[in-house]
Image 1: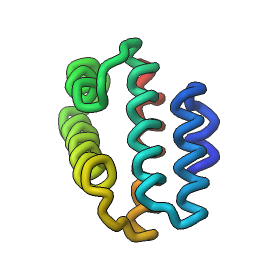
Image 2: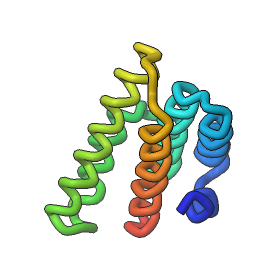
Image 3: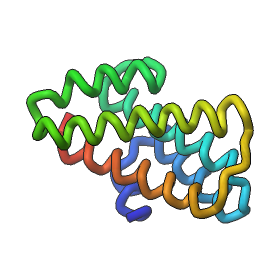
Image 4: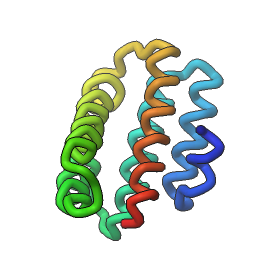
Length: 123
């Protein structure tokens, strides 16, 4: 799953995803989560061809995938993006809270899965 994610990322999102993996290996979970957020943000900027922040691009993505996916699947995907954005803001970006290794691993896989799904939509 991780290797697959790395194979389709653009330069900026790949750099941050690789950093997240290195931080995860070194048990620096806060920095890993921050890098995952940046990877997701850079990935959406690349795919949506803009420089908007993650939260704004989630809204843009929601409009863009309206005709490309089943309504329930679309709602799940957008909700996961929103939950991740909230989590990143509350746990890593602003509070520097303690993130468990298992949570960090989940975030790595979830981030890769979302980016992979967006690739399949061919935006």
